[in-house]
Structure formats: C-alpha cells, structure tokens
Length: 283
Ligand SMILES: NC(=O)c1ccc[n+]([C@@H]2O[C@H](COP(=O)([O-])OP(=O)(O)OC[C@H]3O[C@@H](n4cnc5c(N)ncnc54)[C@H](O)[C@@H]3O)[C@@H](O)[C@H]2O)c1
Image 1 (cartoon, rainbow, N blue to C red):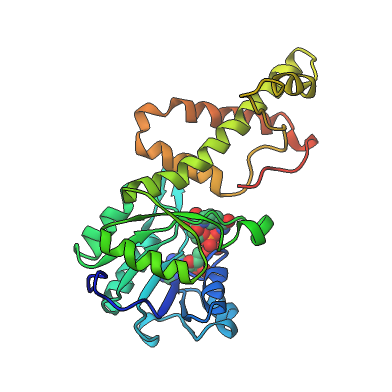
Image 2 (cartoon, protein in one colour):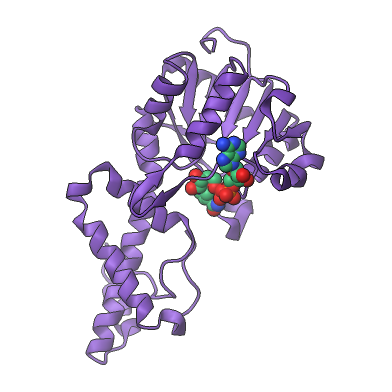
C-alpha cells in the first residue's frame, strides 16, 4: 500500500461484505457519484446489490483494484469470546488483491483488532482507519450510513485521506486520537445503553416485589436534574447490544463484574415475562 500523505484523492471504493450495513453503505457511496464496487462471499448478497453498483462479485480478483476498501463483514462471538475471523479473512483477501490507498474497517471489532490487522495482515504497510457503524435499521434517515461517526487512524496520513473521502461522501466524522478509542467508543456507547436498560429492568423487578408502580418511581426520580431513568420495555433485543457488552468485557475481563451483573438482570427480567411490556429497545 502507498502512504496516503501524497496520494491522489480516493476515486473508487469497494465495499467488502454486502449485508444489512454493507449494502446500504455501498449504495450511499454510489449515490454520491463515487465509483463503487461490492464484494461478498454470499452470491445472494452480491445479487441483491448488483443493480445499484458499478460492479459486484463473489471474487475480489474479478473487480478492478479500488482506491479504498471498506470492510463491513459480520463479527460475532462464541460463548463470551469475540469472533472476528471474517474481518481477518476479508483483509487477507484485500491484501492478496493488491495495494489500495486506504482500508477502512467499519465492522464492530474488539479493542486492539485494527492494530493486529495492520501488523499481521498488512505487515505494517499503508493506511488503515476504523469508522465503526452506528447503523439503526429503525430510522435510516437519521441513523443510517450518513449519521456522524467517530474515526480512528493508524497514522496521520490515513486520517487525511479518509477525512477527505468521507467528507465528499457526506458522512461527518469525529476524529479520535488513537484507533483503539474508536474501537472502544462503539462498544462502550452500546454498553452504556445496555447498563441503563438493565437498571430500569432491575427497578421494575424491585417494584414488582413490593407491589409498587415503576412509573410512579420513574416520574419521581426523573424530577431530579441529573437523573434520566428509561422506560421498562421488553428486555434487551437485537444483536448489537448483547454483542458489544461482551466485546467490552473482553477488553478487561477481570474488571467487568458490573457488565456480568447487568446481563444477569436482563436475563432475569426477560425470564419473568417481559413480553407484557412494550417494544424492545433499538440496539
Ligand atoms: N446491522 C446493524 O444494525 C449494525 C449496526 C451497527 C454495527 N453493525 C456491525 O456491522 C458489521 C456488519 O453487520 P451486518 O449486520 O451488516 O452483518 P450481515 O450478517 O448482515 O452482513 C455481513 C455480510 O458480510 C459477508 N461476509 C462475511 N465474511 C466475508 C468475507 N470474508 N468476505 C466478504 N464478505 C463476507 C456475509 O456474507 C454477509 O453478507 C458487524 O460488525 C456489526 O456488528 C451492524
């Protein structure tokens, strides 16, 4: 990979992983007049995106070498252990394809992953940034591809290239000083929400034990200037919050008892029949 510092602006992008987040991301770039290609190992994902992009394939070598590769493959966990092998495989395929100007990891990853990718897959060469998604399918107009996001970078040159590209793509970015802050930000903001939800679930169960009305308690508590207790709903749903709390725990397992406590509370709450409650929380 070339250093981005003296490189020409990015003119073409290939989105790697055309799923829930990757397909609209690729469509967004294409809609801004940027030459956009898409790659996915799943032929169905490729077929779905085909009509909107300049080229799609299940093989990277069939597509032109793009200036930028945006990685939006799925990440998960097994037990409590983060599973990021798809990101490593996707980056290995990019490295085997050639030397793009920039790689942007948009998948959610545990702290330290981007540095490992840079050292182990890209062998310390070239430019890499992390721009984690805050995508929410419930309101893509406000919380879709173009909402403000954070960006962390492996070096200053990558920052310059990425800020220029994302700026032209109409995506506002908040730069953070260390790429691990960007990784931590994504999982910590969802964990913050998880903890707030678990707290009101706990209050609801305490109220039930004492035959009290949670809404009376919430109204009373929320009358204080620095308190904002959420509603009790159906329990913590979706995939992002349950995953991101585990990714945060993986950053310091010996310190994260509060996270285990919140997960136990949510489990107990759902077991007690949270289905009586209103819709689940967006993640
Ligand atoms: N869906 C959301 O609401 C949401 C919100 C915020 C962040 N995220 C994060 O975005 C990332 C993507 O999530 P998603 O919901 O779009 O996942 P998804 O499962 O809908 O799509 C992932 C796509 O990546 C493809 N893929 C997997 N490995 C690949 C590889 N090696 N090469 C090429 N393609 C590969 C899969 O075939 C699939 O089409 C995850 O890290 C997720 O945590 C998702």
